[in-house]
Length: 238
Image (cartoon, rainbow, N blue to C red; front, side, top):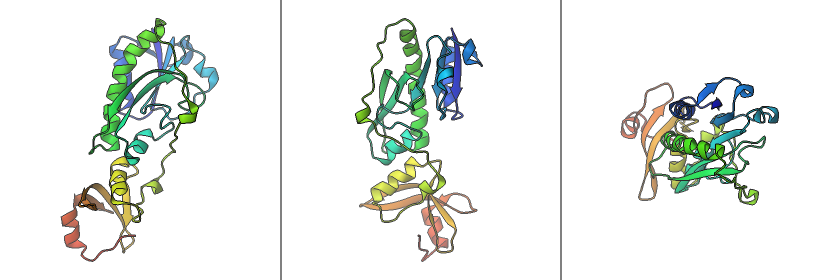
């Protein structure tokens, strides 16, 4: 069985690629030479003409429980929203992002300390483990695709650097989730009175108040919040 693989998020898409290789699939570089296509963290729309080239079409591994959190930033959105559960969906790829019929899903709990980085890694491993048996069942006709309910769909947007700027009028809980959701990129940050950026790398909630734990002033290394305060008494943030 020949598979063409479209992946983007380096390190995590490779988890899927390595699972395919380990399962014995031959990886080819052109869709016209493939029996099946697999997409993981690619982030771009693949033209219909390409999607139709492999005999068994393309399968996409999406890190959410579709139709919830379609789009390019589902993991960040799930953490930011305070979701307790997310998951992985293997679905048929179409020209419309993340809207194809579902072949398989697996729920994954979101831990209170999860960052985008830690949750992405766990979802990639769970997704790769789900993908291989799903391919087998799909090729043998043992799966009946399930249509998504578009009326229940929620959507995410492509993140930009400015999404990481902290609005201090938001609740402490929201900002703490923001720190975790946007780690490592775009990061949660604020500006000091000297105009320089302060990144908040890790934080916790103490008696309903946000307490930074690890911060990184612009142009400096990461440091503890206590160490930062010793050198910035009276600093304010905007």
